[in-house]
Image (cartoon, rainbow, N blue to C red; front, side, top):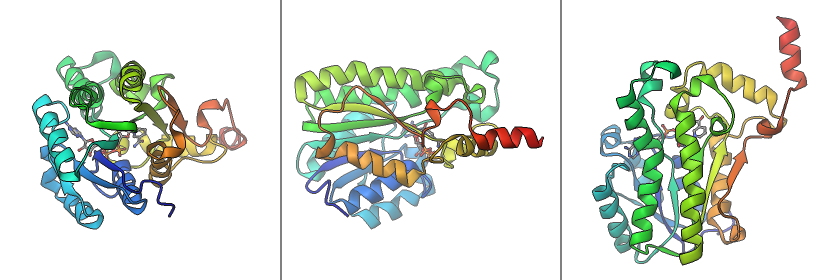
Length: 270
Ligand SMILES: NC(=O)c1ccc[n+]([C@@H]2O[C@H](COP(=O)([O-])OP(=O)(O)OC[C@H]3O[C@@H](n4cnc5c(N)ncnc54)[C@H](O)[C@@H]3O)[C@@H](O)[C@H]2O)c1
């Protein structure tokens, strides 16, 4: 390892189980010398797996519903206290759509579910940054990252209302990122990640087929959760200090492809 995060402090949202992208980021951040607080929704604590990660990485866990300003205020103030200073990095790795989960078609959503999904998956990023900004909780040259998906720009019908949530998430990274950059020299970016077999990912209809399609379309293949973690670590490190307001595609080249030989071969075989 490279000690890329030696002496840095952070908060990592969204480690549910070993497949979670946030789980891999926590393991990698620990290996790179960071100290951090792990957080997830109180309901996710029921599964208890996060405690194993906390033990492994020497971290404390503070439950917080990312839609609750009260929980977020508590999380940020406690984290600064526990870690012994302001934060250098924050990962927002949160996503959930009840419409996806219930199989509601995009054209016929339950709008109570749409509101809830938006609050959890998108608005929560604004709320997290609001609290960090208000409390002046980030150190200069710190880094805030959220995870996105390419359905924010292009049509993936089964991604449903999550596509709209990701479009908002990416926009907020730019809009809030301006104020964070201007006032605190903190950078804000989103990483647009390949489809990845996690709890949130596999909830999307036809996920396995899509995973295999994306694998065959991408010249480098799909990016794994661990590779996403590696990329995230570079964004938390001092090697990317002037990268901000960006949506960074981490997808093995998928987003710039039209068609690939492997996909044509599959098509001809049918
Ligand atoms: N898996 C994929 O294919 C893929 C692709 C691109 C982007 N992403 C994004 O990566 C991020 C992480 O997802 P993942 O794939 O690791 O799945 P995951 O299911 O492991 O993680 C999602 C996390 O969101 C948390 N969460 C849900 N509601 C919450 C709330 N109210 N407050 C706080 N946390 C809450 C869950 O407990 C869980 O830990 C999400 O933003 C997701 O949209 C995933």
